[in-house]
Image (cartoon, rainbow, N blue to C red; front, side, top):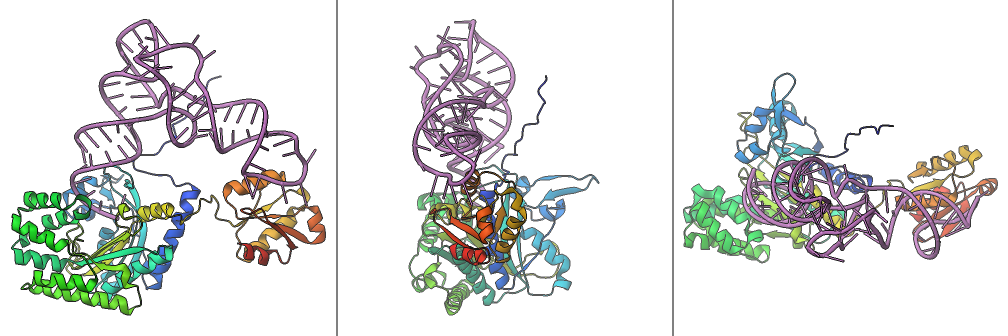
Length: 441
RNA sequence: GUGGCUGUAGCUCAGUUGGUUAGAGCGCCGGAUUGUGAUUCCGGAGGUCGGGGGUUCAAGACCCCUCAGCCACCCCA
């Protein structure tokens, strides 16, 4: 007897399978995001995973080009997998600007691919969860971005978090006064690493890659180190950008954003102005923002974004300014797990209907249906088996309730509802079962 | 893409300077208990020692390559 040759089941480096206990909280998080986005009027879109290579490489950065999954399709076309959702949005907006009308608000939750090296929390396939408003420059959309993130994190169950905002114009204003405007990309990249690497290393990088003098580097670090309440920070940085029209205007803009967030009723304790937030991406031109969890700062930013002047300049003459942000799905889920905000249930249903009187299948089906009609997710065990074995199954899968009825109960028109966690059980009439189950959940 | 660490049962890990049939806990399956789980007791299954090559009388252990994971750089979600 020869053994059958099996292909080894395995997944590619940087790609993941999601079993039920992982997928259940994942879907819940994305549903929450969807709900909040929709509540602000953002509409869903989707775009193809595969794009013409020229659409994706147009952005030009060497890094993203290196990370791009690219190949020739069966028709010999050069194609690539999208590496973010912003480029597809730019293409989409340019392609349909006339039909869409402005402003255009969309959210997009979908996987993207990057062929880069893996690390904890960094994969080659991961989901991005973006929302953007295209076609407007007003401060209201700046404020809204902060509010969406604020509402979203609260809706997910986080209480202690800090949304750190800054304005590229403030940074650029400072660079103007320092005479470093032409090195802004290098300077911003270095400053972005401040919390991670510390002042000394940033100072060294400022000198080496941006060519900053000791004095210039000192001013930059002094600026980035300003802390305190929003008012204190604004007051402290205003003189540093004095003389730069753009810098002064940007400080004013930040003031307006803070005022708006407060007016909307969001907690200003959760919003800080942080001059060290730069964001590595060089297409940001206005408000930039990062969000950290107060209890897990080491996990990094869980939501970040900013304002850009020109989203789709590569694809159309029409100027499309906008603002948007992205949720770090994997980081948020890691944090939720860490903070005990997710259970480890392997089933999305609330109740298991135990099936052991083989000739009463119809009664069981009816019972399960009545529970579902009341909004109680109910799984009927698929074959008649010992009660003990089925309760064991219910426990293992993480059902919260077991509904038990045999010939005796059906005879009396009753059933037992058992709370698995406590072992308590109540006996109710079949008609009352759905309401009783709702109460016990 | 560069550098470092790691890989033994489903999971977490033991395994002496290379030396007989590679172990434990948890989990899993079955039974005690054919109408009550998670606690108890008894029994059982399960390992190409990540994969390939080499050194050796002998390799889980040593060497090379490869795959995967983790960490740092880079960049970013």
